Image (cartoon, rainbow, N blue to C red; front, side):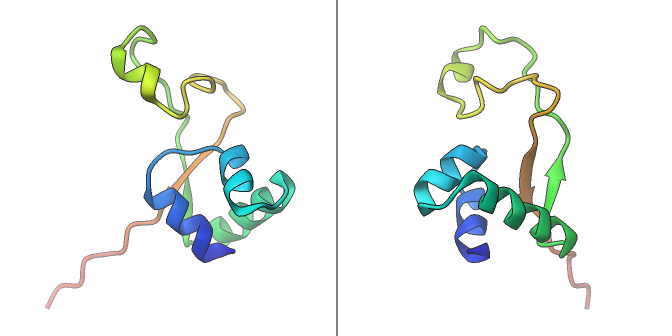
Amino acid sequence: MFREIKKELGKGPTTVDEIARKLGVSKERVKDALRLMVEMEIIEEMPPHSCPTKSSITCSFCPLKNKCGVADYRTYGLKEKPNKQS
């Protein structure tokens, strides 16, 4: 399931609900997997997302529009790999 979650996160912002729906699993299972992936340093928890203005035209297309600015809402992103220097 980690691979599928990484694929979804690679597409951009999404929600636990959306990942659970796409993978056909419970939200609790997705939350557990995300927690493990953070502990394993595969992904990282991102700072709370908040748009400068909620009236922006781009906000209407954002998958997080209903969660924007909610304090207990968590978002995750793929952890960047360090650059290899030769």
